[in-house]
Length: 382
Image (cartoon, rainbow, N blue to C red):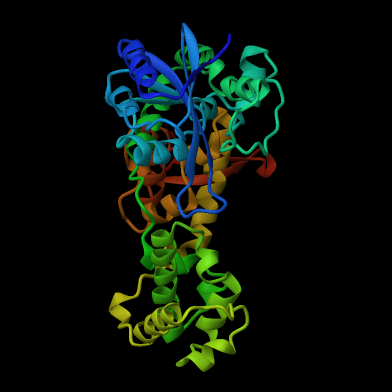
């Protein structure tokens, strides 16, 4: 099917009207983020039962698609997290309903498969290979590029049908839809600049006022990069950032001695950097934003490992992606009696309550089959 090319406001408005009453539509985006702070939207692909359209956001404002996203229709997508964030920035909202075919595939034992693998396994169709390094910002797109882009949404509605059928047969459709809804509702906002230092190599080993310097310089770098719409490494390289944190400079001359500092660093930029260093050196401990790992009681690590082993086996028995059941952080939250996904929704009966019985001493883990199987057994023998 020849995809429609939408590159003017009138055609986009007509597309939105066409899709207004559709109960579901497939959507994907192409974007580039190598040279910008926020990914730049380069193409939007949309499919519905009667057609496929490619919206060119380089020539037409995609904001009117917000009406479609906010409407009653369900957006079907594959691995939608980045798409949701990009759509919110471009269109002002996320979809009102979401079915993520990658998430749903995890509930039938497929892990986190690519779109091509999912289509081939469930529909028996092999997607045409294209150039994954295509520059989607170049115009005009060649016919084969348009066909390749359209393929990213062309099979999503059929995948939705197949996955719903299989999930209903397994009694897991509600699990999958609940998980998709949870991901849709996740807060997709700008990263907190004050936690950017967590990504610095060796950040976990920092001590003393080095942490304060890392926090404030990392935040300055993020805020400057966002203002200039460039990757943060363009403002200050990772190597230079590590050098600043390890031996905080107090003057422009000190800065010049830091490995990785660009000799072309402008005076105002250098002064702003030095100011951030000064604030970091004086940062009170109460204002330090520590990584989650630093707040974890390390004495809980063995318990987390044991619980994780049972969860992995449980996931295998259920033919579920283990990551869908719980992460190590969520197990730790439960051990620390903090709010956790394990106490909500479909996970409660499946794994949350059994683990709570274990923690209350009402159940125990027992090795069976010569250690090949871990069984959670109630103390009363049930």
